[in-house]
Image (cartoon, rainbow, N blue to C red; front, side, top):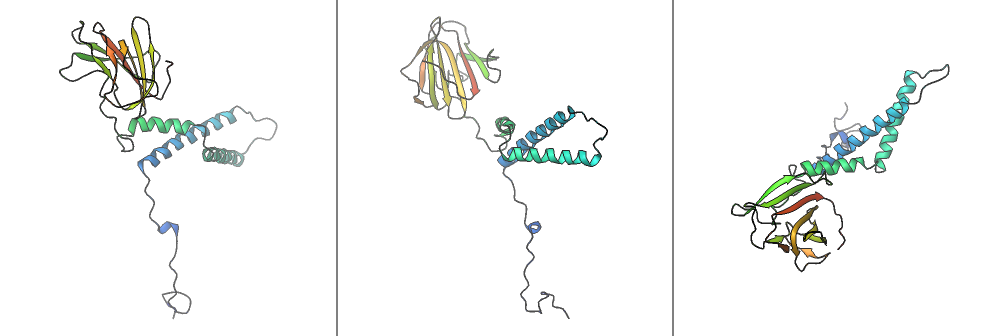
Length: 237
């Protein structure tokens, strides 16, 4: 009678069946899921590109490709796409990942929410300033605001402050006593502020804390223009 513990004469040395199918699937983090989705879209784009390229090559001669050859070509294209992905792809996956992260990162718990800005001007209920969004003509991916004095008359010499922590990228004097200041923030955003007035004693490359004074709005100034966008750009001083 055979031993249920194994086929080795009942010595009890039964070796457990080791199979990858018995292991529980490893749970992926939200960040890994976004990466997978981004890679999937890039591979889909590459497959469609390969398909479009093959469609431009017309078959000629008396021998036409059969169904097996067409399947082989599709499998070969898939192989090329996988190899491209292993070598870093064409950069499309990274672009999609960044867009998904910006849009859903906070919701998925991957990205910390952006703290409430502490500038550039006071915007509480008691403030004399009111913000109106507008489309910056040269920055389609940016969010821009025109911050006006509520009463549209001359006011006090108001301080212009850094909205978040960051580094001063540059400051520049413009026409009509206008000043432009740019900051690269620690949260990945960049601020550009244009206002009538002067800057305080700050220099390019200086580390700033949220709420630090950047300059002063002239009493006759009616508006300040504030643009927020991702990615650093430098401004010559």
